[in-house]
Length: 258
Ligand SMILES: Nc1ncnc2c1ncn2[C@@H]1O[C@H](COP(=O)(O)OP(=O)(O)OP(=O)(O)O)[C@@H](O)[C@H]1O
Image (cartoon, rainbow, N blue to C red; front, side, top):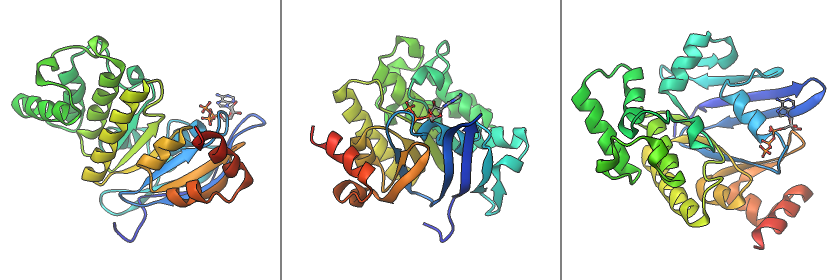
């Protein structure tokens, strides 16, 4: 870890007309740190994630990001082209539904390879070799490289989406319910894989989930949201083992006893 954060969020709010999406959110994210954002449906998790990843314009507040050259840049003062470049190179975004993050009608190899081309790799042999390597890292056999993702199972699609996101060596990955919609046994394997990759690559990540087990496994720090606001934040183990806000106590007791 360096002594400066990667992302700085200051008083971020998003209103949909008079309805609160998220309100007055501030935190720093450090290199290599995984932050889980948890809360019930409608608490503002997706709104926050979309505002952080520049998919949605906040109503007020700032988000600054430390670029590779060390300079902090205000994400909402960048040009659209600069933001798109960040999205393609330094960031990843893993959607709950793999179809939202994959191109379903091109091969698995091309799904991974085109991200490399987007960052300037033009050598077919290198691209193919890197794609094979990444497919094996996410446990997809080499003989499936020419198959389209629509011929894959849900778990395989999600693993392919992860490979597509990580192949360019991003520093920050946004994840929206990365294991949602999968069978429990598939979820467990995927979580294991994700945890290994995040650790090996030293990735920083912001993971939105309503599943406290996912937060426990993946994150070091946790932010609990209710009605658009943060009601508790702290080290994940502390928040789950010794929740202080009444709402977190309710959330933990209702979910962890199963
Ligand atoms: N496009 C929109 N227009 C109007 N209101 C919206 C819009 N998107 C979200 N909201 C409202 O903002 C609040 C937060 O929603 P958000 O989707 O961020 O919550 P969430 O915690 O991600 O929920 P879920 O877990 O169900 O996805 C809710 O009251 C929701 O109705």
